[in-house]
Image (tube, rainbow, N blue to C red; front, side):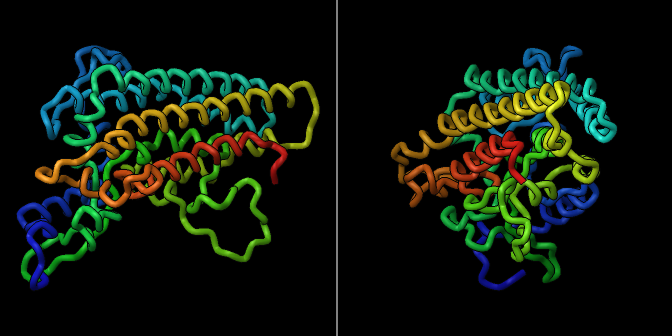
Length: 339
């Protein structure tokens, strides 16, 4: 271990060594991820995983109902939308052969699916208090990336003993690590840029600047290996947007375009609902006066960023600018006249 390290920066060998080994086996970074806190952290009392009365967390940090509800809402959303995955995979294949009926029907089902997921998201307000989330739950999800304001300028040192170890700055768990939402983006052809000053669907194809990986691409490293490989496969299979953009004016193609834009608009509205939730659970609590007696990763990282544009999410992004950019990029995909 490096000399002169502050104890609060160091993960000791008794924790870091087994954590690193388990992470390698799971094909995940050694930090709390969305999969660990949500997908692998629930039990059921009924057959319907999308029914919030049937699912319960196995482990929580705080022991509060607020935390359990926060995790289980995400599980229910994943379960509710699971049926759409094979439907949309078939639709992508059908687009290659010009099978309008299959694609249009799938897009209508996807629209309804996203609406149902959005309704579940809005149930977060029922049993998860914003103050409890921000001050008690969020610190455990904070990660170590972009956390200099919270006292982790270099991240965390993973001490492996015998003088071995390394610094890591890792994103915390966030719903941005959900492979489901990225799947929707991919099949609909929604592209996301790494910066907020570019528009993917209208940028010049002759640009000599090499594109940088977007957050959405980078965050796949925080997904389970099978999920990551599935998304890469779908990404290289094609998107329905390419089919919808064909310069045709037949009645079938007009129906296809309408179904496509309706689905994209619904996904954009879902992201708007998420922005409203983030405002209530993170932005507003961060603007309240923080006691100097009690500081944690959530409150400390909010200091110096009292305006909502400077807040950092648990995934290591500038919170509201990133979410608004993602929403706007989704809406932009509905412009089928863009090159």
